[in-house]
Length: 149
Image (tube, rainbow, N blue to C red; front, side):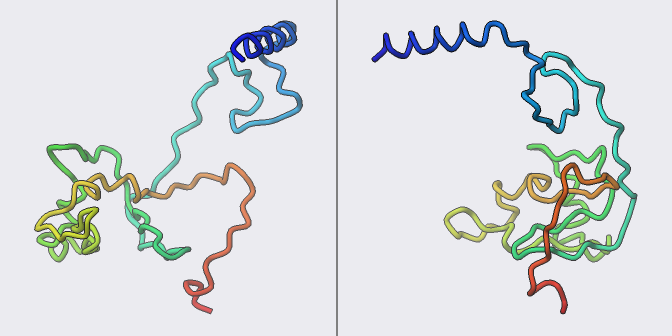
């Protein structure tokens, strides 16, 4: 079996030896027309407004979107900038939305006195919105229950 796999690999490699890396076979990617072996220039940074009204959710269990700028926020093992406004002790003073009770539950369903380690890194689920145009066409429709119709 090992000899057969080696033989197949050798035949495939010899067939591909004449094919250029930049040959895409007519396929396009989000990289545009940049060849795979080239580094393309980074896109411009997208503008994220400073503060907005909260966003409506589009599907059940969707994490709320962040309606403000988060550049420079530190969320690491030692600190979490998000909790300075969204914690249960600070949300009234800041006028922010308080974090959900679900953020205090462990994987086993035990409720903790502080945010669960699995929910501590907010931007794994919650993301800010920018003025970026969609990368691909999208025909997504809001869930009927949240559509308000």
